[in-house]
Length: 333
Image (cartoon, rainbow, N blue to C red; front, side):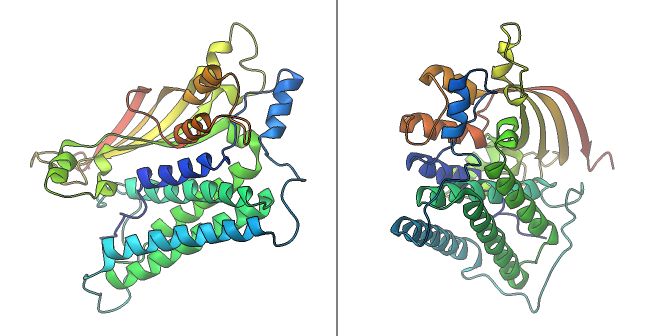
């Protein structure tokens, strides 16, 4: 059985992103420009600005690299004590065999989306740290995405000696980092989509937490991964007074596995997988109305930048309406 714990750390990844935003590095999800002022705010957000960044090895660049080194060191120490310290080693290299999204897999595929989500968020967040240090956008994103891919790849190598090397996990890691690089450098993509998680702790996890179990990352039954399409990101769609309501609506597709992990309290519970479609609130647009404009580096209040970043990666509970759903389960198979 593959160990999927590392790939599913929504709260940890969001905390990293919020810290980057607090440093003044969050970008704006700007609606389609309808006035010169709107166009200016898009440019101020820093997307694709070929002139941004300092030349040469400045102190800011070195400090930002040091920040990344410290971040990865801290995560590595935590991962060692969480999953490897005191664990028996395999007699040899073990790899593959976790089945991706198969109905008989140990997490029903949620672990793969967790890997994708983690490398996506950490790529974008560490890119912002490098941008704050004076790096240009493209090199910063490639460094951040490359480090995320290498780091998570090394985790899989270590897993091979304790659990197993999962090709599916590593492919998900690469895909998440790739999407992060794309969205950093293509503002039209960034304005159009988000990849988020809706997490609600299950009763099983809450019961375990009372007994000292803090392993929320494997509370897969409580995690819903959501791909959101912003209507506000479609050029001219929400410009008129008749369609302005679309700024506050996202069309979404989501995935959730239930009763895989943690072990359900009900012994008769059947593991199932759920693919759903619906609509969700675009909380970033609501924040723009509250604060009087988009979240822009160096101009917007820290609270706006932090909240904007959080809602880019998190769907708060009960802000998504499922309208259509497909399900399959082990019993049905």
